[in-house]
Amino acid sequence: MEAEFPVDAVEVGRIAGAWGVKGWIRVEPYATDPQALFSSKRWHLRPPDPLPAGPPRAWPALLRVIHAREHGSAVVAQVDGIQDRDAAQALYAGRVYVSRASFPTPAANEYYWVDLIGLAVVNRQGESLGEVTDLLDTGAHAVLRLRRGEAEVLIPFVDAYVDSVDLAARTIVVDWGLDY
Image (tube, rainbow, N blue to C red; front, side, top):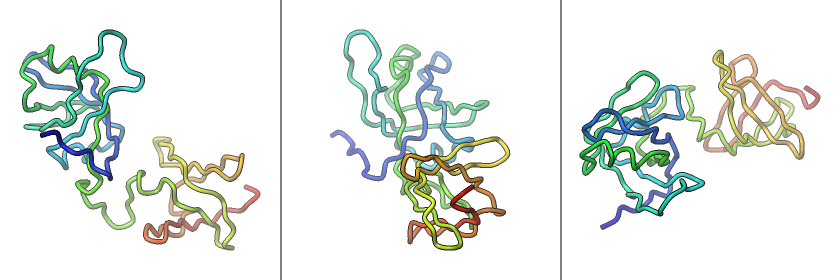
């Protein structure tokens, strides 16, 4: 029986190849802190886009994780049914998804980027600044990337500018002018 792809699936990384000779895989997580990968023993897999050259192959829809751990900036994992290096390497570039419901609960005033994308951003005067389309990691802090018509607006996601985030109302209030 094939596992059903969760409706709340979030892409959290991609398979970067085999790790070792016993069938372990190496995953490049998209987040600096890969806790979403550790929060679930069920990783859903989608083939890379575009598909790699060569003969078509079947991609498993679900990877049942036996063991996973950090290894430098990557995550290495032992997966049920993958017994050797060739089987692990065959999953190269596969996109790894985890159900959002299995993510660890963030601390107060912490947010997953996936939860911020699509939120409306308004300033203290109630003027619309746009919608969050993406976030950038500058190393020092995250930056909200907004789309307002044809314009792009960048706002540092720091307390000095962000007054509140209301996930239920899907709104972020910031101290930012229309002309910045």
